[in-house]
Image (cartoon, rainbow, N blue to C red; front, side, top):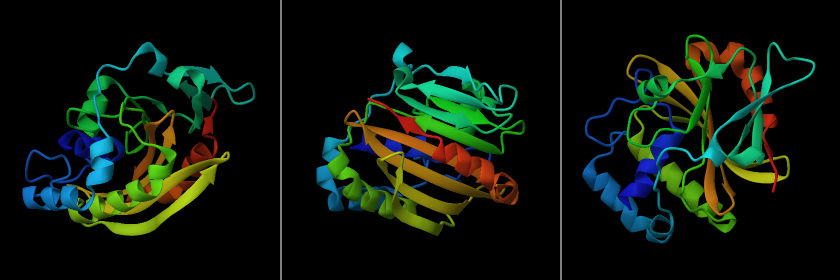
Length: 226
């Protein structure tokens, strides 16, 4: 159960721009809050487990330059080429050290791409967390409660489902109060091969207006193939 709760941190921006934590939990949840949530959502929690390790070769990214915009944008292929998206122009791969700072904790996203200042990024995670398509509505409810009780200064923008290239995703869009700034998170979660697949498009609020169009293009470029 605790392993599943750690999976939530894979989808959220924490660290120097991140949430201020008052205990070992990356989201700062109090122990009694966590216990209450586990009690209210046992079926989903018991079915979803997380056992992250070093990404396997199948999850290593492959960059394919687009013929007309090779200098500014790339289609990034992940999960053995079955998942891909076009990164925003100028975005580069964060190093493991940068990911550790931006997403502290034992289970960071496998791949993160960001602008030069790292104030805007796209994070991808495909852990060994089981999530079936029929579980998406329950997972959405769980995440809403989890975030409302665990994220300081949360302000909801969207809590809905969206379809991207015929695939149904949970969309959780919100602003949170970080240690030194406000952070915009646009989180997308779906089931792929019976596992959780997540993207988080995030930015400091002050930067968001200038990068919104590119982030939405990145979102809309996501492709999933069998």
